[in-house]
Structures are given as structure tokens and as C-alpha cells.
Amino acid sequence: MRPLWRCRACGAQWPCPPARLALLVEYRHDRAALLVYLATLMHEAADQLGQLNGHSHPAGLTDRFLTWARPRGQDPETGR
Image (tube, rainbow, N blue to C red; front, side, top):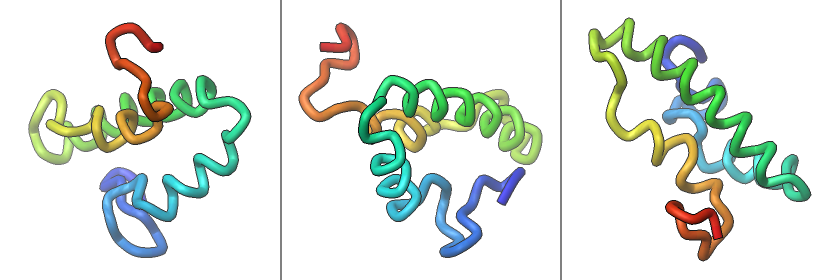
């Protein structure tokens, strides 16, 4: 549900655990595309949530949208 960025099914912050699982399955062969998609949505969410909350960039969006989607064991600095 935009602009609140909540799941329509459970009401939790999107992407909620079921949405994350569905995204991992959908993008199982292209993790890079998943990260690009999530980064695009994160920027959209930052704009919309920032307007609602009066903040320029709500805290925690990187963890909420991207950190969970990186392959396990991947160094965020090097990408390896």
C-alpha cells in the first residue's frame, strides 16, 4: 500500500517476510536484477515516506529493502 509502503495482505512494512520469499523465488536466477528492482523501489519509498513523515530520508530503508537480498557471505563493500 503506497505511500505507506505496507503489505496489503498482512499490514507489515513492505517487503514483509512473505514478500521477501516471493521475490527471492521470482528472481532466483538473477539476484542483480532483484537488487536493482529493490533499489529503485527504495528510492521511491524514501520520497513518499519522507513526504509523509517530513524527513528527507527515513532511517533503515537500506536494511529494509536491500540488505536482506544480498547473497549470503557477500561483502557489502566489495560485492564478493
